[in-house]
Length: 102
Length: 510
Image (cartoon, rainbow over the protein chains, first blue to last red):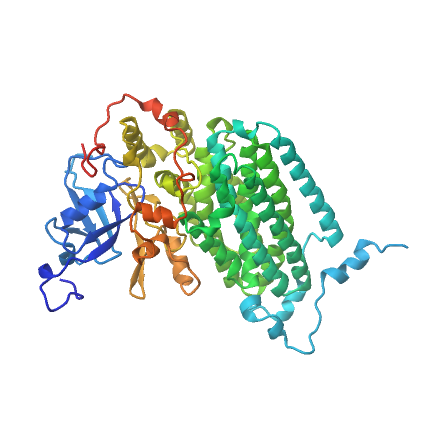
């Protein structure tokens, strides 16, 4: 839970807030603006970022996608609010490529 | 009547400083405009330009230049020269006309500021000629661009660009307002005549002129050559100012030159880099952008700063590495966000063109090839839609250009890294380490809001691509598109392609 969360309601009961992110997908050439919400899961964040890039500028690979935030790999089921991802934060989405493959 | 020789009278008219009796010096030359700082006021008495000119000489020479430039234009207007130019080259000129015409007008204001607040009469005299030069440049650029409006409405942006909130002029306004409008005249003389005009305009006006001639655009080459001859004269305001500033405050001199060099390098990477390495037809390219930069900017810049006892800027290694990446990333960004441009950016990545790029930039295929291949395969699969934007690129809070500079990791992979900082409760993102550092040192200066800032603040409505294009002043008749998709995709038709976005269901991948 973030320090900014209100005390009245548990985080899962609060209305989702828009969280605009600075995001980059794998080896794409540019950071992009991607809006998500506090209620989105990390998996949904990965999909939202990938939507703008995967198969368009970066060829899609058959692997799970993972999200890194402040150097930390986030669990896919965690929500944006739970992960402490704040507006204007930077996230990086990478393919979870098994070792030995490239 | 016998006329005096020039050398017998010129010193009276070029140096008209006198002692004020009714006001103090600070009232006439206030610090916030004149900016003497740690330099003793009397030190400016030694300011002297190398090449002296009188008003009659100035007028006679300028008249000749104007007559010559307009005579060539008039002759070519009757020919079909324009119609035979390659669209790639035409787009280089559209970008130049829109990006430069009103910057020349901003330079009028900068020169006028020096003409009023310069700390030596000779300097003010030189700046007076300088502002006449810049007025001529604003006029000739606007007029030459205007000729083509009837043939192609994108040329209308010659005059329109700086009146819009398109992201390109926002970036240029931020750079040039900091260089010409907001600084005191000492900093202005270091930033504009010394750094920008002595160095960078060579690239745009001499090197691009060579490409213009190769491309058969005699009219454009003629126009920018005419402009460059003025630069050589009024840019000399920088040298004498630098000599005095370095002697009394070398730290300030170093900082001002460093920050203006960096800002100029970023802007040129965005505008001149793609024009030279992608838009100019392959057979007409004289040198790569990197080679031009090395020959025209870097060697001269290093010699110049060493002559003044200054050091290479602290960002030098980052800048040099960027010569292999910045303009390639920016080109891809300009192309992908092409509906936001007032020109038709050609991708310029056919097999032959890629061979040339790879030869000039040995990491090109590794860093950019795969992404262009994915876009090529989408186009060949009739899915141009997948190569059009649905969101904004992140724009650097300092240079306002997309954050698109890949750097190499120790493991050999190339990634765009995050350079950010938090200040006043807000997170700012930058394209490079040096942009972040300059912003931090300059954070109390005027910095325009980026398009991202404006979008997130709700200034752009509706908050979608249509709303953004409308905010930028972009209309369907002008909106940029690739002039010839087949020209660079036909080499790759029929090859197997995997991992592409599906055209019928956005967001799903095959």
